[in-house]
Amino acid sequence: MAIDLVTRRDWNARAPRGDYTQLDSTKGVKVHYTGGRVDPAIVSDHDRCVALVRSIQSYHMDGNGWIDIGYSFVACPHRKVFEGRGLHHLPAANGPGLNSGHYAVLGLVGNTGLIEPPDAILHAILDAVQYVRDSGDAGREIKGHRDGYATDCPGAPLYGWVRRGAPRPGEDAEGPTTPPFPGRPLTYPPVTRGQDVRTWQAQMRERGWDLDVDGAYGPASRDVCRRFQRQQGVTDDGIVGPVTWRLAWEAPGG
Image 1: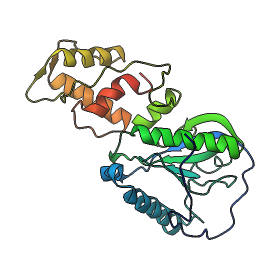
Image 2 (image 1 turned 30 degrees about the vertical axis):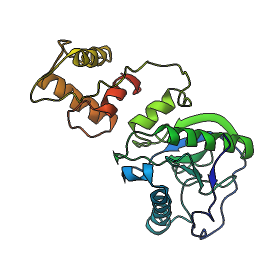
Image 3 (image 1 turned 90 degrees about the vertical axis):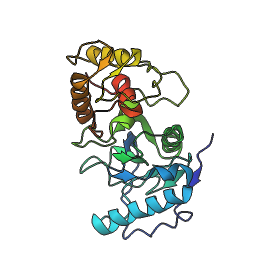
């Protein structure tokens, strides 16, 4: 599928307040997230995506004092790619001294609300990556913002995908196979019991956590869950829901 590009004119972008710095070539792309709350309603309402991108531009220009939105492109859950600074223009989002190395592509997910990137966002990010390779003289690298810069960006779920090689959804990729989410959250109190608990406990033990594999999700399991969630930068509620379940297999590190 060719890139479904939303031009600056289409999303009614403000004009930049100065001239861009020329960007002739890069090593590739750095992937970002918003770092704030993203309303899950954007998944079913593209107008909300447009409003969000415009608000990000305003924050970057009026709050950060930048000449424009800091990202090169923005990927939304309708598999559309918003033109930010665009091709051959130095981004501002990767960090001081790092912007000349990579284009900056934002996936519209945050640290609360919409945390887990829908497949369409992943497709859109990769559509943007292919676009900057084909037309922007970008190299092959796909990295997270946190690679080389002290930040939680692009969040644990999106960074885990980057670390797995940024595969197209539905395509095989090297890395762990995640069992399907069991369909119920693992919670305490009361104690949750079952094979799904045992499966999660075994995986956490494999990752190096000191945890009995007894099929009973009690206070010890909840404590491990909370510490793991804090490590991964997601809400530490002690509940193994879909995001925490997936991270147990897919998050980088031990």
